Image 1 (cartoon, rainbow, N blue to C red):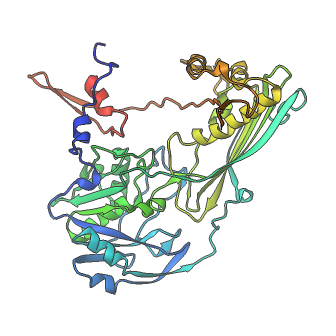
Image 2 (cartoon, one colour):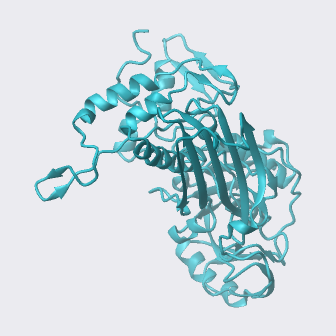
Image 3 (spheres, rainbow, N blue to C red):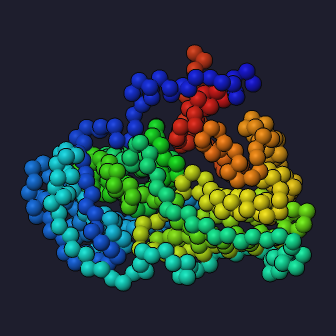
Length: 470
């Protein structure tokens, strides 16, 4: 253990600082050309007319692909990954004229330069005949419950013996990923029919699996390369439709094709943290012990896929509560599908739960930290299992010590630094430690060096370094 766990310089540091690290859009296979997307001006509906003649005549344009002339794909059924929606099917771009939402790509222009491709894409004219759809208004009244849990006196919810109670509703808006590196894909086919894709991906295996199904290929014929990811935060876990479009365009023109999304396209081509409305009700006895929690969630999804995050999970296990009732409802909208984003589900759920805990602490007359310690869970009641390890109590103590929590004044607006008001707050945040099977190949050489091969991606936490240490 002289190496593992010890502070050490990043092995990929020199490459990143020196500009030598190669990201998805920076691969240049021989004969590389560029593609640009054409977005539906409105939706949902279907493409009633699409004019591509002017775009096709622009200098350097090699192809303008639409649902009318694009090669047909196999679109074989997928084995959904854990990050994929629980129901529905991802958009099949250029397979037909259907439009699910405004901004959905309905054509792709391939040209000899990125500028020429985008210029020609702007010349494509699209008319969409709209249908009624489900609308863009987030109305919890249209929500359909997809998950409910209950334990203890879920119906009574501690009403009879409760000395204190609060109920609050919180809105959390839609949140978008905006990493410095936009999503990009370079796709190239070889003479044997194999496909190589350089993609901004956190999960090359998932991209490989979906591309193989979309094109009706054996997975051994698909290779996905992603040595560096310039910020993803969950947005690069799925195989987004533009990845398939890059491969489709490369097959159509017989040359490697690059698609790099523009900043504005990241709002429709990639997912986001879904909007939620959450109602949390807490009940406590006179001593400040929680008796019951009720957590209700309404979360948006697209009209064509059910994206379902475990928003209520923390409420069921974080504190020592005998009665917990939760429900999660999906509200479909005519938009693109949400996706994981930095602690998916838990972040949104903890936001509402911890606000409620602060309000209940004030109602009971306890310090927010003391209130949480009084309801500290030594056992996971949701699973009825002991924690394999838990250092939250020590975390509370260390955080309070470093932050000077003991000097906090409990009254609002009572702490000042000159003319400035000073606020001290605390909250609990948790995230599960997921485990899954993995395969890694290590080759040791006579000179003492080693080569490690794995499909894991380094999103920034230092995977290259930790692998080297091991």
